[in-house]
Amino acid sequence: MSDTAEAVITFVPDTDKESKAIFGFWIYIMTDCVLFASLFATYAVLRNNTFGGPDGAQIFNLPYVLAETIVLLTSSFTCGLGILSARRRHKNKVLMWFSISFFLGLTFLALELSDFRHLAAMGDSWRRSGFLSAFFTLVGTHGAHITVGLFWMATMLFRIWQVGLTKANVRRLTLLSIFWHFLDLIWIFIFTIVYLFGVMQV
Image 1: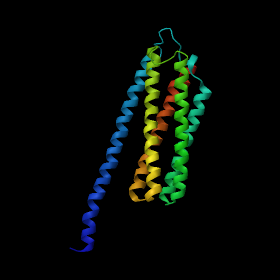
Image 2 (image 1 turned 90 degrees about the vertical axis):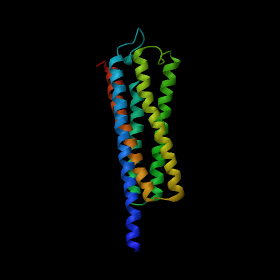
Image 3 (image 1 turned 135 degrees about the vertical axis):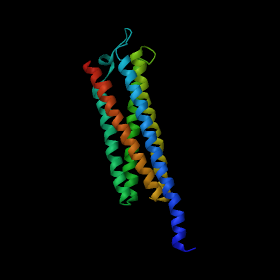
Image 4 (image 1 turned 180 degrees about the vertical axis):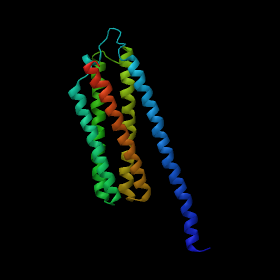
């Protein structure tokens, strides 16, 4: 058998495997969309069920949440720069931009946990009312996804530092970038529907 025929035989399964992996990832993103849509719908139903407790206008600190938003959106921007660097095979720039994204994502998560801790210390935990239960579940689920993204990002940084920008690593970085941008999009909806409308009492 010729070398060319062998190359074709070994290439086709890899391409098929890669296509299935990308398709599976998009299926996952769609299921996540359904999950968050359900959580948003639940929040919309329960947002006025305060049972004598505080509502969003009383507990939300909009400048604080705006700072969180800027941090997360900046991390999405640096993630995009990292992908551009990966396509140009600039390993050191990829490590730099994704390290910045990781730090910003960690900062966002720390700010969110600090906000949760402050609310709980004030007696406004998820157990106080239906509104707060829906709020903590929705925002907490997003925070859990951020945590997963940070672990994924840390793993990719280590792999790229160790073996470089292989085809597989660039593909995984691209999927990570899509996941991270998706979380930013979800946060924009959370900021608008939960925090902004909550403060404005829309």
